[in-house]
Every structure is written in C-alpha cells, then in structure tokens.
Length: 240
Image (cartoon, rainbow, N blue to C red; front, top):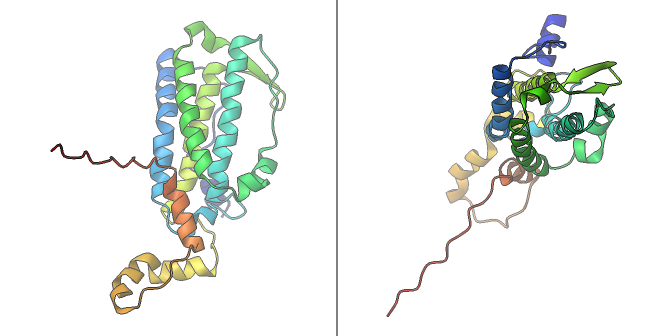
C-alpha cells in the first residue's frame, strides 16, 4: 500500500540533491524547461470533463491546484536564479506552498492565466539561462529551509524535475490511474460516456433549446480557451 502511494506521490521518483552537472547536462535541462509549456498544454487538452477537480492521489492536490501551483513555484524559481546571478549568495525567501495552493486563486481560480503565465515565464527563463556564462552556473543562493547553498546548475535541474514531476501527476489523472473519485456527476459521465457526444446523436430528434452555460461547458472552455484564437481575416472587396 505504501509503495503504491509513493508511486502516486512521486511518479518519476524523488529529486537527488547535492549533485553537480556538466555544461552539456545543463544545456539539455534548459531545453526541457523551454519545451515544458507545450507539454503542459498537450496534457491539459487530454483532460475530460470534471478532471480539473480530480486529485492525482488521495489527499493530494486537484489538477487545477497543480497547474496553478506550477505558476507560483516557477515565478519564485525564476526570481531566485536572477538574484543568485546579480547578488553575492543571497538568502532567498521561502513560501508556504501548501497554503498558497489553498488560496482562492490557487484552489478555484481559472487555469487560463496560469497556463499563459507559465508559457511567457518559461520563454523569459530559458532566454535568461541561455545568456549565462559558464561561471554564472556556479553562483547560487542560500535556502534557509534546507540550510544550504544551491548552485544555479542544481536549481535548473530541480525545476526540470519539478516540471516533469507535476506533469506526471496530471497524466495520472489523464490515464485514469489516480485513485480518487470526483463526485457523482462526473462518475455518471464516466459510465455513460461523454455527455456532449451523446447529445449530438439525439439532437435531431429534440426541439432546439435555449443555450445555457453549464459547469461542464465552463470547464471545457477553461481547458481550451488559453489557446490564442486566430483572428478572422476580413475578405477583400473585389475591384470593379
């Protein structure tokens, strides 16, 4: 039982602290960070109705909280690395991530701003890291919680792990491997199939109804709305 719970909690294993990394390894890590927003968007596309509110393990965060937490965490990571480059081993300010995840914007807020924020942030982050000299990677910041200095090369590896760690949590839900129910309504949808697909097959036999925004529509919109909608082109008028 404990082994199974650990697998849900750490699907890719735990991070190994205190390791040093070569320049080639760090370059690979930076590439992974730059590609992460696209991986996250692809995972979100695969979520079904109700799954934003599903947890990846018992007593764990919901998918919504995980995505909003990624934005919170990586903003801190980006700032910490900039402080390390511009100051002499600065003491960073830890934050209570569990309490942040319980705040309204973390627990119930739309994922759309977080996904857009992560995309822009990782673009800036990767460009910043690519601009560093090799000597800069040996600079670091002091973490008062772990009581150790974390070099930038290790910090980069940490956030690569963190990205893939939470991406794996989302995929546990996508693949149906999480072990937590998400409420009667979603259970019914799971058993009977996608309600939207079902409604299409019977639409011709029913009179048209007034359109209303249901929780399912709202959530589906959240999962897809962060994508930029292409602008409609105005057709050119024919010359006479």
